[in-house]
Image (cartoon, rainbow, N blue to C red; front, side):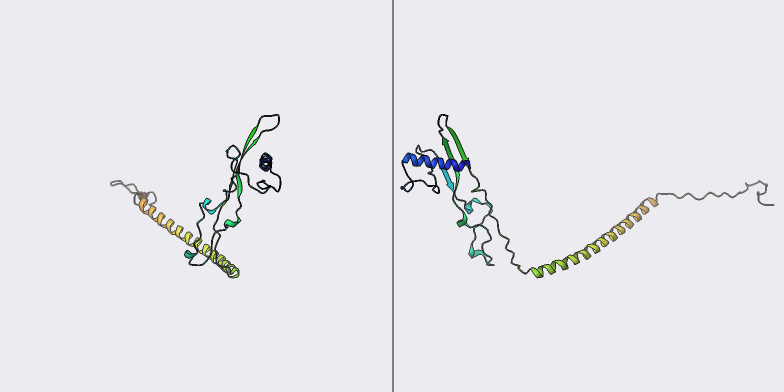
Length: 197
């Protein structure tokens, strides 16, 4: 990319300024790191290697505390890490134009996650499958019986609620007696009853 072109241009410029050719001592080759400072003492480059100290989730493994002898739970090995260019200052003086200045920052060397590996000691997959199937069948019956129990519970609560309502509001309701529609003669009235002959 652009940063690689800038690194090559800086190496070529430093080699030219010091009069170094390929094979000379002090020659900066393609795989060599750039110097940290330029000839004027300004910061030119910075290289960095990621370590476990950069991760907040990593705890150092201590074999003396590993009573179950499960081994290091982290998927991190320091020897796999390589030094990376994380900062580069590049000044392109250009021919016939004004100089341009570029800064390159690479955070990939520190943006790494160190995670704990799942240390499940159960490696017998056949027993696990049988157990899961049996648990699934049992779970269906548990679900059905739980649903029936909940339905009965709601029914009982409903019965108690209706009884409470009838008790509370049944006492206040007054029952009016039925009106007697039979004919009754008044005292001193000698008129016969309509049906009597």
